[in-house]
Image (cartoon, rainbow, N blue to C red; front, top):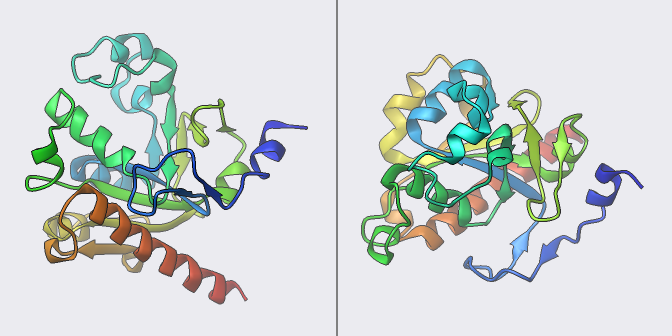
Length: 210
């Protein structure tokens, strides 16, 4: 059985990780999380690039940088990486890259500054020709992922509205949503809220296809 065929057999929920508010990974959607600045570039180009492609550096060079606080291996930077839609890991990693160290509890709560999430159907990406699942990362795409036709939603904090809506985007503005600070208190409530929004957009898109 091929790697994509094995990946399609994934359960709707995984219970090995309980770090999110739902205490389980919900596998219908995956997301790529990035900074507002990088999100601007993604919207302008119409594609999410691996760190190697964005920085024009080898994985070896990127792994040695101080901003690699998570200690990721060189091949990590050759892929566009995804977490399941309700996962908290992506925003935590964006903060690590920004801070150059693991965020404190205070930085994940009172001082929490969300990234921008790009949401996709997991099964759509499994069928992508550069899809990979290495046994630890359930979903990653070699080199780059084009937004069209895969993107379900881009969700950002309200503070990013002006920047992102001013961007000459390759995707319809209707796919971009903004969340006010009053709707979340910390990393966990943010993750829960944006997954709800993305899942609502997924239901809408399914109804349109019918």
